[in-house]
Amino acid sequence: MEIVLNTFGTSLNRDNECFVVSNDQGRQRVPPESVSSITLCRGVSITSDAVLLAISHGIEIRFVDRRGMPQGLVWSHRYGSISTIRKGQLEFTSSPAAVDWIKGVIVKKLENQQALLLMLGADSPAVRAAADHAIAHIEALRLKAAALSGERVADVAGMLRGIEGAASRAYFAAFNAALPAAYRFAERSQHPAADVANALLNYGYGILYGRVEASLIKSGIDPYIGVMHRDDYNRPVLVYDVIELYRVWVDYVVAALLCQNAVTDDYYSTAPDGSCWLEGLGRRVLIQSVNDYLAELTVTSGGLSRSRATAIDLYAQQLAQRFKDAAGSAPKK
Image (cartoon, rainbow, N blue to C red; front, side, top):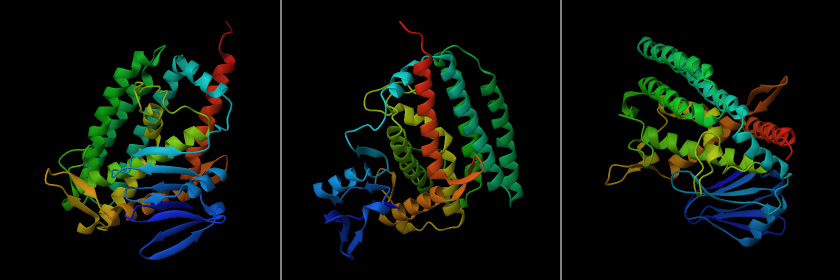
């Protein structure tokens, strides 16, 4: 289970070998053996004893801002992996194999977008028409991305960004058309969101960013060494590459909440500058909905049904092995 604390004034302490969550509703003891991660939002406190208990059990502690974006991680100082992975990561990023990898990521992202649009347009002829138009446009872009070739990622990065941007515009136009009229948005807005639909999407992506970053770190991968996204100070750019494989999961959860008219005025507030922010209730519902979706046993690999969360971990492990192999195949100097 995940411990997610986002109510102002909540505290996380330690009592012997258990976590203790305390707020104005009371106290709850949680054994560390049942905890996979801890997420703390603004206005929540944690004691050093609770931090040390989490570290001793290999439980990551994630701090997030009001957008749900991770701002810090606490984990053991022991990487738990061999440095060959990170050496190979550097070799990989400048190799032709990186071109094939990032093309595969973008192609898969576009396929995921097409699949979700097929689901959203199932019951309405008007929505179906908009979805079909977007799907056809995205298919042409997908084929264009798959046909690109180059020796280095820099050779294809500009074209891939253009393809990704054009697909995103077509996708969100059809996605928007599938929403109830009250929740439709003028455009995709991020920092900050201009409406509740975008606020939900942004916060959901923030949850996913934390998941992907933690999986990469646990697998021994440096999240700050990117492939297509440019290296930058204090930006885990590899996370921005890998997350493209999974964004559609958040899109599905948000679309489901909005299409079920589950979102009320209590979920969000609008600031004087017009920006939209999720309130405590909205964050709690979205976090629970995303976590429930990630925990579903629906992803099949090797004949086994696994949860979506496990699929992210396994992908990170496979990527780490790919980086390790790249180090082993690099020419010796």
